[in-house]
Length: 316
Image: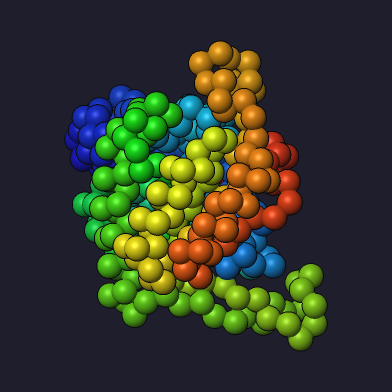
């Protein structure tokens, strides 16, 4: 880690390596809140056996509506060493997960890079997923080119005003667009997206004789619709499709859940409701109309806090 932190676009300059907390809410000590197989990602990530999700404490965005606010504010979870992180990766692989899924990893990018390198020397062979809010420095993304196999960033906003209001990051779109461009460039340079048909085996709940499609390399860009923000979401989807076409998959999410800190406050009344089915259908119809083919959509009522895992240091 640099003496002063410049890992993300905040470039807050905190001396995290000496114990100061950055904008992310964390020092240079690795803090993990949960490490377990996770079934609630996109089908090509979780499959039938789960994704090996490692949830890191802290975040460089602090979105006001965050569903993982319990950990994103920093300071929760268990402090571990790089060697312990390496062991967690190997323990998850032994549970037959399809990948190692690094959730909110940005501020620990260099520690993760070292842990992955060590784990690979000891037999780690499944893909590494970088699951982030999309607010990334291009230099950091470049530094991770030999570490990450699957990039899974958000593209939250296109409007500086919306990004400022909800994430205090008016430059969010510019930085996310640059980062995603570099992610796509890396994947194309390695031969492009790879999704394989996998035989799930005898320990799976999948019907006998069927296969599971699992991504081994690629880019999935997530976009979560906020209530009342269909026009902005359409702009995001149009940008992603016109810029990257079929070089990426787009995950169109309806799962926005009003959390207690939103429901109990008065600052963001527009966020106190769920996304309606009509809003989400309008957005999906738009995606189809403009020609988006590589997409994941959500069905049914997924806007529930029961989909948020318990951040109790399990598996850490």
